[in-house]
Length: 336
Image (tube, rainbow, N blue to C red):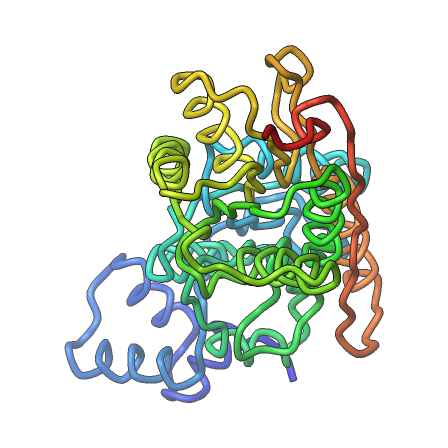
């Protein structure tokens, strides 16, 4: 199978490619009935107009890769994009980036825009509650599609993700090793988000391995740093507050750091999932389970390049390991 062309649309309707071009570009007179038949054929065949016909090409492909990320302001995704760009630049490919703002509707809109520009490949960090069955025809037609940080939903495709569950388990086990028995979890929302779900399961795995009960009152959520700070303050206000916290992502860790500093609670141990800029100069320096976002980007780019070079093997999942960086915030035992 291949992606439909303007010639295919013309053949379906029984008109010339020039007529199809006039309809799609609104360039020149075309009978209303013909216009309707052309648009019906476009929808039937799933044709995407080529808006980058003058772009450089790699072989027979347009020299652009479309990348969808949830947030432009999150340094994690910026580093992922940097890893991709460094790997594809030498092949003459240009990286185009758009933000979905964690909404499936905007994610689909960006994907449609990239497909209309006839990109060589798609790379997607899925938003929460997204569904990727709409990409099955593109996948079958041979378009390289790689999912980063979170796997696809409803679609079998290549993916590159961090070892979220194992990393979280190691971070919580580290707190347990210093004598903590009441460990709070500050995570992302929604709870169904793949990374949040995997890290939360790692948190529970560590508790279970140590024979500690799971206490739901020690779990709170916040999507951004401000909300995470409020979640942290709620946990600290409990009648039996946690003596340690595990933050499920970098924004949650930032919020927890701010809340602990403002409340003067330096005795509460903290381990964050994902590193932070200037984590070493905090007081105390932040202990983290560090991902390798650049390695995620490079691995995803290498998978795309292999697909562009003709690899038609089955979809493959790549797991990028994490590492615990000990700095001080997670190494203090509980008081009292």
